[in-house]
Image (tube, rainbow, N blue to C red; front, side):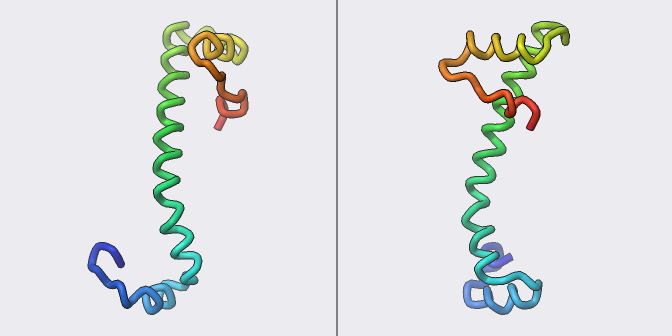
Length: 84
C-alpha cells in the first residue's frame, strides 16, 4: 500500500492502524526480496529433482536421487533439501 499509493509519510499511521510494529514492517520489507530469490532457487531445485524422478519413471529412491545429483552437480545438495 505504501509503495503503491506513495504514502511515504504515512508509514507510522498505517502500521499503527494494522497493528504492526514499524520495525516489523521494515524487516518484512527488507526480507521480501530475499524470499523471492529463495523461492525461485527452490523451484529450480524442484524442477531438477522432478526431471530425475520422471526420467526414472518414478522408480527411484533417496539414494538414487542423491547419486544422480552427484553426477550432475559439482556440489550435491543436502539430503534435507529433498524434503523441504
